[in-house]
Image 1 (spheres, rainbow, N blue to C red):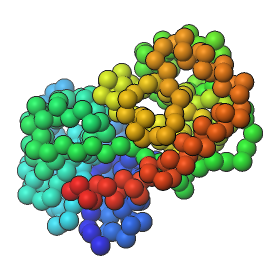
Image 2 (spheres, one colour):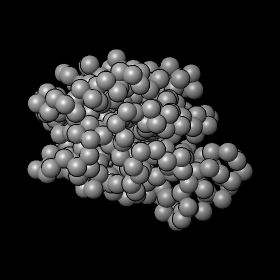
Image 3 (cartoon, one colour):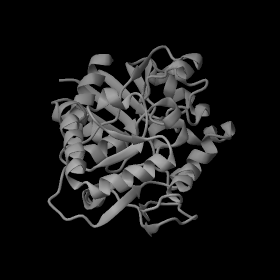
Length: 309
């Protein structure tokens, strides 16, 4: 049994939650430290800390930066944007790794900080940017699903096409050109498109996946460039949903069969085809679910991570 400390953001259904759960399921002692304890407006704090270095003087008062970290076999830091240099220096004396889920976004969080970690764990195989920033070691770990949450439900279909996610301009540009009006679940959609619904999480999210004939996935442009399939890729697949996502070369290594698109015209054609062919749609969805259960659960990822570090 290993003693593992995870530092990150509290809450349900984020990466930290799933990894802590998986570590414990494997018989390890997993201690979670919420770096946002004492912070009431996460978005504002992140904005300030990524742009004004002087504001980091105030961060020393946060509980996470006043904490004495006991010896652990592994300390896993998710993002770590609120950790001061003093805290990072103390952590560097232990077996500490950075899990950085934002691919190449927010590089200011990594510059002049990445050297404190024994290595960085990322979700892309394109590791050159991290090496150039001074990472001692870079490891790739893909996202996954949690079969206890992401699972098929025996319910009827309610939607032809759905998209679940936050507003990005590229997502809006794609969705506005669909011939089938999509149902959009998410926040910050000030430019409305299709039929809008509030954001969904947890069981509600899994229900929407199961109620959808076609679950559309549109990545952040940086993730697409990095060939870093997002969490939703694996969550839809694990929930038994039919996934339609952008084409990435790595997807054929991760799934035996997955339906992809590289243009809006191709996307429209595939949506119309699979709305008509329920049998083939269900066959593809079943294959995705089986692939996830065999290779892409958080238990798999936790085991892989522990072998890497």
